[in-house]
Image (cartoon, rainbow, N blue to C red; front, side, top):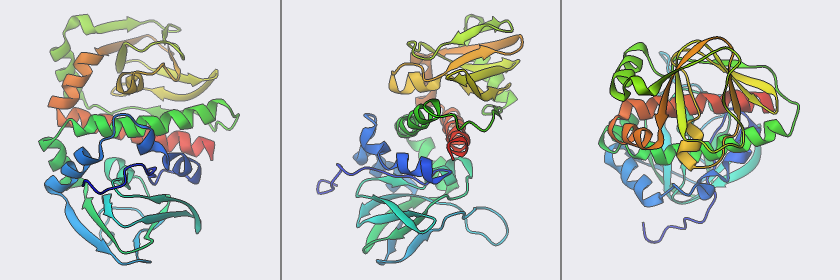
Length: 299
């Protein structure tokens, strides 16, 4: 690993070409990313793969699951170079030490880019089972991956706020199932549970974020530049971005109806991610689905 060039910018297949182009810069911009840690994570359960120059790794619009389709895999490149194309047009390259293709594994999203080995390349790949097995061994890796994804998500939110391209709000729910919600409420205690009457502003864009929230009951609207981009329903969560990267809030959240929330401070959040792989995986999936929705609006 000592000879790897980690200055390269890391792309990832996102839901659209717009999101994919912003993803090219994500790994280099995330202060949480450590290529050596990523290498150890992938190597713990992953499979070594070699691709000849010109060979496809995955194809745009490719879906995983189903009787005749292969399972999705995410990759870490440790030798060679991989090119990414959208609609047969080159837009970026994966360099040594970069992760790519993770959204298909984390959230089952179709590929929105084609990945081709530009030269003979060596990779370590993880399918969904291998990813979760590695996460059980090294749950703290979820935080690093969140840092990469939050960087991309903030880029998409900034672009959405600067445009009028919104195509309507989606409902974000069920990141946590009923059992996990109950366990979380019990673990954090009554002091973590609060009520938000209809119309209450729960958090404001630009503010410092001390808490993330899980909706236990009710519905919360997420707005960017006064435009509702998402609605969070029971089991959904919001506000975690500020806990991951310590940056200001990117959006405003308002209770649309009387709601009940579970608030999670940063220390508790970090402890949950580091000790509870299922919680970390649920957060990653929620962020991935949000990326997909915002990318669709930008498109």
